[in-house]
Image 1 (cartoon, one colour):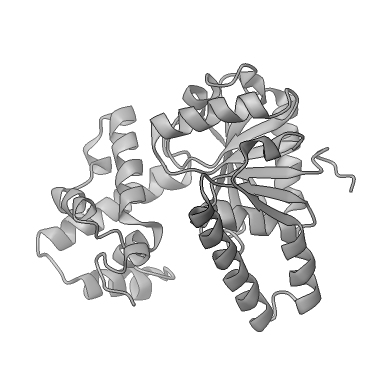
Image 2: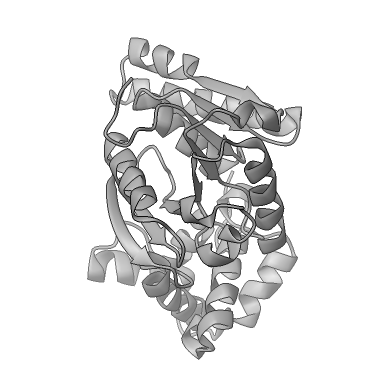
Amino acid sequence: MSNASGIESVAVVGAGLMGSGIAESVAVAGFPVVLRDVDEVSVGRARDRIESSFTRAVAGGKLDAGQAGLARERIELTTDLEAIAGADLVIEAVPENLDLKLEVMRAIDRAAEDDCVIGSNTSSIPIAELAQAVHVPERVLGLHFFAPVPVMRLVEIVVALDTSASTLTRATAFVEELGKSAIETKDRSGFIVNMLLIPYLMAAVRMYAEGFASREDIDAGMKLGCGHPMGPLTLCDFIGLDVVYAISDSLVEEFKAHEYAPPPLLKRMVASGRLGRKSGRGFYEYE
């Protein structure tokens, strides 16, 4: 296929919730995509996650069975990092840990072609810091997708100090080719959405921790009073409390401002494995 972006094949490194969703969206848009993770267990989970998502999409009328079948065939799941060689775009989508992301970016740099675009799905880590792990940092930028990726239309494109104009142009065109909307932001921790969202979430956690109101009433207040699709504590559980904590920590490190600071309750919940929906328990309990 020929596209305005010049991107004809994609690789995603990291097959968790975000990586799987990115790969699915890329495949539905007509691109072949390699989805890589470290072991067969992780790859198997990704396969099951993608299959379930396609099943829901067909049942909900978002895709017909033929479209889902073709998209499924475009996804190659693998543990072999060398399989990303030849991709025009490689997207890093591993957990929000700086050391891990730097290690993965170095590995991508070794395996990928010199002219491919490298995007990071980080939600808070400075792209300039990640770009220094790549020998041509001009081709690195942030491509921050939102969960659930097949449903959410927004992608934040994060322009680092060294990101070239051509890299930005190609990435913007690619996001449009996925049928999503791009917003462009400078390279500051939290970018646009999380810089606005995190103080709101932390205020809700503090309110709950101080016994000011029940979790149900805090969430109902924002749903019914402000028209939000879900309340802040439910949203924390949906994102993952470990992810919320990591983003908060990054924002505090960058701006040294109290409104970004994670309350002690959030730290204790993460330490005890209460991570939200993915662990079965957060501010609420889940099956």
